[in-house]
Amino acid sequence: MKHIATHEFGLGFLLIALSASLLGQAPPDNRADHNAPDSASAASRTLVSASPRNQPHADSFVIGNGDLLTINVWKEADLSRSIPVRSDGKISLPLVGEVQATGHTPLQLEQEIATKLKSYMTDPEVTVMVQQINSETFNIVGQVAKPGSYSLALATTVMDAIAIAGGFRDFAKKKNVYVLRQIPGGESRTTFNYNDYIKGKNPSKNITLEPHDTVVVP
Image (cartoon, rainbow, N blue to C red):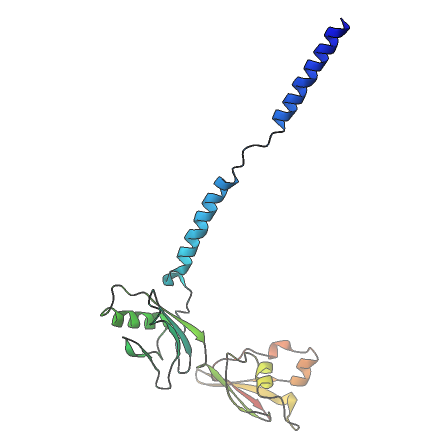
């Protein structure tokens, strides 16, 4: 009787151990299957981002003299390059020749270049991006170390303008700085008290400069 009980106990223990082994078995690894759609999606995104039609460009910006442009002709490395707009407002490209750039938006310039390239290739895809804006400038005059005309790409506020112009001269009237701006029907004048600003007062007076603004330091 004792022998039978021991046998049954041993059999029960074996069944329990076998069940535990089966229940603890890890399910098949399907991670490769889960990753397949992700890989396809990543490849799709790579193809999409590679197409020049999907690259961002400022289609409302008007190109000006001195602006640095990046011209990309799809699958035509010899025609793709960075090129500045000349003082006469034009750029020159192989096959295309001279093209008027100043006064056009990047989108308009794309269309112009693509039209000229149709004589040499089927359905050319052209992207024009403004790499650096040099045509939008401001002036700073008066009691600063280096008065002159500067690109807005280098300075965007009154404080930036003062810094890029080398700072104040010894007798500058720092409390009486002002910005002149052309507006319809006349000219606006915005004062800027440097001494107050560095004390944390009137931070809104450190305005964002616009093309053709003039910062005056008496």
